[in-house]
Image (cartoon, rainbow, N blue to C red; front, side, top):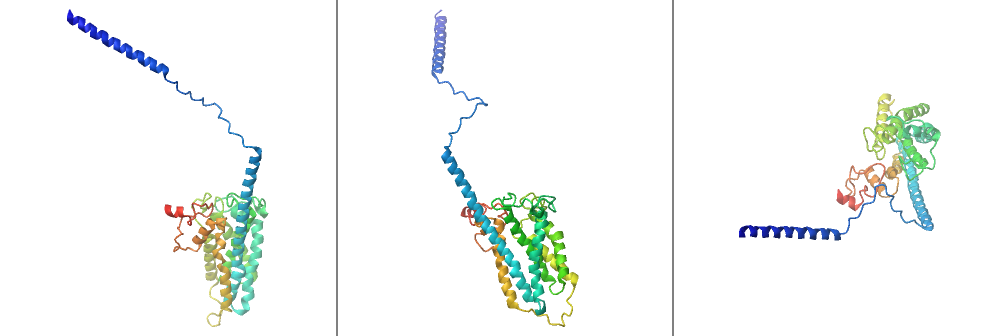
Length: 341
């Protein structure tokens, strides 16, 4: 009997303790703060504080002034690069080839370069620029820019977003001029002037314009940044200018054969000094091909270093710089970029 009474008291004590614990838990939960209810998904966001009209106008004016200053500087640099490339043709190549031929052929050889400056300029304005830089097939552009239609002061964001498209057109024209002029050295003294002019016109249409579109034009087969099937990095015309002109000059020389009278007749250069002066002008190649950097800053510096292949320069990192879209981080003169490599 005493054992039963003891068990009953233990059971009653446990039941009372459990009831008190539950009561205490209910009181604590009642006093706890309710969790914040998240706003509905479709609730409108809080409106940002409005900028005063006077400050907004000043910000707009500052942004416009910054863009105008950048466009002015980039435009000046590109025109300077265009002038440097043009100097490579005349007087550069004209004097260089003129000094290497015999005295009786100096004027005709020099006129090869100067007449091509006029002929290719007209051809470029009529159809050349459109075939090179208008969108079309992977091998040739369409006719949207024929007679420079639509090529004005507005930038073309595909190629250079901070300079007028007219400036970009002029810069690319300089390479279209010098490329056939380079070939003229292969048949100097050996081809009639009319035949040379006809050949160079056809060569520009059949060889240079398609190749320029494939390497530099948007959607070209070898374009490195604008959707090329086989991307090629061409900084200063290594493919478009030098390979095409070099191979074409070799084909011309092989097709025409040996010179009449060689080696029985003396064919000494007219003036090596004249050729050296022309080579000095042609040294503008160091500055002219930096134009693809568009801005005359770190991109142009890096493009110039890449062009002359100065692998001994501690700031040079091969294979890291695109032809377009230069930024601070891509320039090899940036200490952060060098430390990250």
